[in-house]
Length: 375
Ligand SMILES: *[C@@H]1O[C@H](CO)[C@@H](O)[C@H](O)[C@H]1NC(C)=O
Ligand SMILES: *[C@@H]1O[C@H](CO)[C@@H](O)[C@H](O)[C@H]1NC(C)=O
Ligand SMILES: *[C@@H]1O[C@H](CO)[C@@H](O)[C@H](O)[C@H]1NC(C)=O
Ligand SMILES: *[C@@H]1O[C@H](CO)[C@@H](O)[C@H](O)[C@H]1NC(C)=O
Image 1 (cartoon, rainbow, N blue to C red):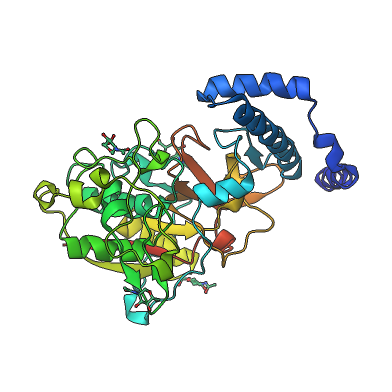
Image 2 (cartoon, protein in one colour):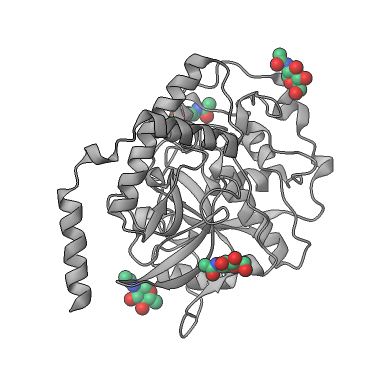
């Protein structure tokens, strides 16, 4: 009874709240912005830019307050390192263009692993098959991270030493297209793990992160590079290429098969059916899996089980790595979740990870589950 009354009370508060209460006064806002800049090591080239970033920051802060009230602590949102870019910029520079998950022929799917019951929770992060959290920066390269992290897991599952593999090789060199399903790998403009496995298979291997390090995340800012479109880049599938790139950092200059990690070869790839029980079984028997989802609402995620009210499962725009699952018991609800490794740095979310509702096809999280099969 008490629970019901409390729940009603909270609904009432939400109903009367108007958006005006989420406005932050400029003096408080300015102070917070300065603290935030110091914390995230941000600086801007001009006063004009600083002022426009401050304005976006204030708007975002209002949104974050509103989200925290709407989600009542079940999911927490925070002014993280994405707090000075608008939702539109976030979609354009960090996420990929929205796409519906391709459906594959039946024989592409893994058949069910036999298992009586699933454990209450499961977590690959403590098993030595998951590398530290990486940071893609301001580039739509999540698909290459998701692919490579699946590969890192598959390599370690074979008893090999856990090794960070080259995301940049895939970003620079993989222009695989799939005219039948209308998808392509497009460097910093997005791509698909299922195509990237095919590229690595065809290339005959992959270099390590150490020999071919990631540099695409800053568009030529210090310590980053202006990557060129991969060979085979298809304008029809990918849209117009970058208007300038630096040939000395392209695939043609850097790619070196002599430096491939010895013995690491992709033989094939498999997809996992959409049934989330089967996905959990596959996760346990196969290892960390590449997945994709609609991540529009993840920009300010801080902690908790991500369960946005509106999140179209048809509009995938981010690829990540599925590493575990569990059940969260809150005051009002019990929620099954997936544990997911992101590529937005270790300071984002729950130490670089997030949790998302499991069992309801949330944000399309179950629609593009794939893995490489190694030789
Ligand atoms: C998974 O394991 C890591 C490392 O021990 C731990 O920090 C994290 O809380 C675990 N996550 C879940 C959801 O079990
Ligand atoms: C690019 O993609 C389009 C659309 O799928 C396809 O018709 C065309 O053949 C591709 N071009 C090349 C050069 O592969
Ligand atoms: C191209 O990249 C190289 C290597 O990072 C750098 O030394 C050079 O200055 C860059 N050239 C241009 C025109 O930006
Ligand atoms: C998912 O698969 C499990 C195990 O085969 C089965 O019990 C369950 O009914 C399936 N769920 C749906 C929604 O098809």
